[in-house]
Length: 129
Image (cartoon, rainbow, N blue to C red; front, side):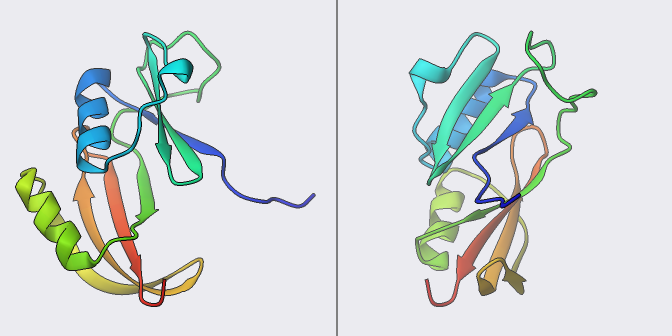
């Protein structure tokens, strides 16, 4: 079996509207209305999707969907200083970083923040990308 990539991830959130505003406005992720329902919202993140769901979603989901338990890394295409300024303009606190790390494509610099449900979001900046 040959895995090619991750297609989408699902985050369980307490308030779809609040999370939609955060991911759409702060991260500029387009909302895909044709794939969204009353208990699930789909956003485009590069070539992948992020789905936001509530705990009472009536669909196949994790055995114990838990709000605030995600830890994910998003690769950013902008300069880190521009992103830091952007986050500040939305009153989003950076909880750690910048720190140097290694990711799937090599050396990177990361900053960390939390979304409205306290999920840990790592924003990664590749040095040569």
